[in-house]
Image 1: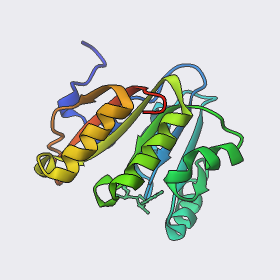
Image 2: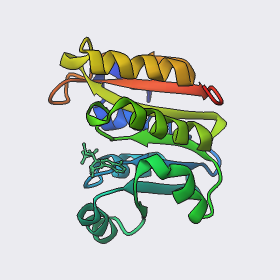
Image 3: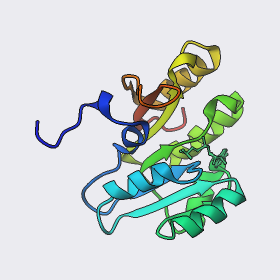
Image 4: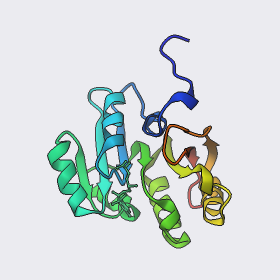
Length: 181
Ligand SMILES: C[S@@+](CC[C@H](N)C(=O)[O-])C[C@H]1O[C@@H](n2cnc3c(N)ncnc32)[C@H](O)[C@@H]1O
C-alpha cells in the first residue's frame, strides 16, 4: 500500500503518535514529554488548527521545552492532576493522550489515579497510548499495569515489539475508556 508503513518498522515515537487524528481540529495532550522528541513527531501529524499540549513535572524540562519548542503549550504539573491542569488551560476534553511516563516506577494507587484522570478527559472516540519495555513484560509490575489498562479501557491492543528502540519496547493502544472502573 503506497504511503502506509507497517507497524513493526516504525519507531517508538511514531507508534505512540499514531493515534493523533490527522483530520479536523483535534486536541492532543502528551504526558511526560521529557526533552520533546515525541512532541515533535506529534506535531508533524497534527492537522493545522489542532491544539497540542504537554504536561511535564520537571521544571528544568518545562523551561527547556518552552525555549526549544515554543509552538508547544507546556503545562507544568503532575499528570495525576491532568483534568485540573487541562481545565485551567480551558480544555475540557481531548482526542488523544500520548504518554512517555515511567509507569513502572509508580505505585498502584498512583497509576490508578493517573489513569482515572486520563479516562476522565478523553473524548468517547479518543485514544490513549503508552509504552513498556519488552524485557519487562512478564514482570509483575508490567502485568499489573496491563491488567489495570484492561480494566480502564474496553480495548487494549499491544503492538509488536519496536526493535529499533533501545531497549526494545511495546506500545499499548487503548480505546473506549470505562467510566468509573
Ligand atoms: C522517560 S522520560 C520522557 C521520555 C521522552 N519521550 C524522551 O524521549 O525524552 C519521562 C518524563 O516524564 C516526566 N514525568 C515523570 N513523572 C511525571 C508526572 N507525574 N507528571 C508529568 N510528568 C512526569 C519526567 O520528568 C520525564 O521528563
